[in-house]
Each structure stands twice: as structure tokens, then as C-alpha cells.
Amino acid sequence: MVSVVGLVLFAAVLAAHTLFAAVLTRFFRLRLNTQWGYVIYSFTVTPVVLLVTTLVFFGIFPIGAGLNLGATALLGAAVGLPLALGFTIDTLYVPSPEEMDLPQQR
Image (tube, rainbow, N blue to C red):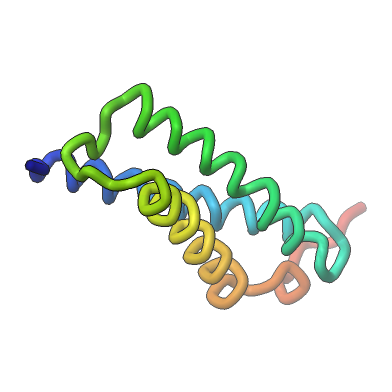
């Protein structure tokens, strides 16, 4: 049976993964000067990082041990959902780097 603490920790990991995916997408948007480069990097590098942190949180630290999720459901919830949400938040709701006013460089 799952405890309330297990559910809260699971939700915290999902929120942290979403934040991490949004920050990585933003980093790639700022650093890459191509039109599709940040999309390719966001969908290839970010899932690897989220997979490693998923293995750490759910493998070494037994977060969500009582949830009894299968491997596919765990990867979908801990990698796929935060990746989609983080990418969507950064792409749709954060202004693009070209729209930001920056001070002049000397």
C-alpha cells in the first residue's frame, strides 16, 4: 500500500523533472542559433538526463516503492510526462530569446 509520503515524494520528483526539462530546453534555445537544433537536443539529451535521475531516485532511493508501477509506466510518468510538460512550458509560455531586450555589448 502506498503512503502519503510516497505520493508526495513522487509528485516532487515529477515537478523537479519538469523544471529540469524546461531549464534544459531554455538552455538549448539560448545557446543554439539554429531553428531546429534546440528541438533535436531537447528530445535527445534531456531524456537521457531524466532517465539517469529516475534511476537514482527510484532505484537507489526507494521513492514510490509502494506505487507498484511497471517499468513502462514509471518511464512514461517520470521521463515522458515531464519532458513533454517542460518542453511545452518553455516553448509556448516563455518568450523566445529574440523577443528579449538585452543591454548593448561594448
